Length: 369
Image (cartoon, rainbow, N blue to C red; front, side, top):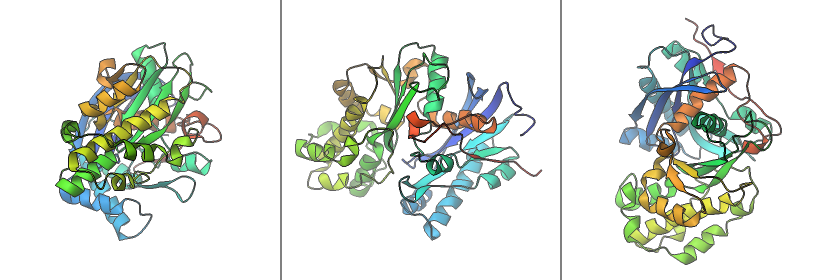
């Protein structure tokens, strides 16, 4: 183990995340001992260029081939550029980019070379977080729940709370902070509720050449097509008990359900589908949470936030109201998880991914110099 990391005590960990929305690389520092969050540090963002985003899109859903190789090259360069400017870092958590996710089939694929990144940065890099979980029968996702548990402790909340991440895919983490450790049965329940920003982004990109429905402006002028919404909720995924997870493209047929609608009605209907999937998922929570803390890009969409507020029986607020940074929460999560992996602590458990037993995934690569 790296001498700076040691067996205990706080370290400065740097985490990076490139999500399914394909907007760029988030990077953030967390001072943590792997159990507690001691301090949140500085953060940064490196956006993808139009060309890089196109290369990454071409790799989505693929397991091999030149598209995957090119996507990996983009991820390696972008992450080095995003991470090289941070000082005093003891360890790096590198998630890479998920191109394909099929836990009940071919497994999960995140591109990005953690060993090369360790050499470039001159720091230990923890990467390939999901493979071991899938090998042990887990879904491999979501992985942020152990960090959400630490966040709830940091917040000092005593009542159950839910974290709702609205990235390309939507996922929730139910946290009961009365437990001491996240792997204790009952402390956590986490799963993907359905699609989030990905289908809306794909719709407006294909029809209007836009990257997103910024501020929900397109959806705000549309009307929800109830028939399409009912067909969406009839998908077998919603009948499955959690834990469960999705690939970014698992609900790609959503675009077809709104194919005959104009731009505004299509965007409004897809946005309503996101909220409806979350509402269905919340029914699995053991008890009603005190509030739902929303992270990810979807929290900036007032149309979606209003739909969620109407659909759920508890307050729905951005995570900033709890003192957290919703733009950096996933990057911070992989900083925290990197320390857990380096110290032999679990990063997932039956309640978060359905894995058979608590497991700590990840490869630790150390620079030779």
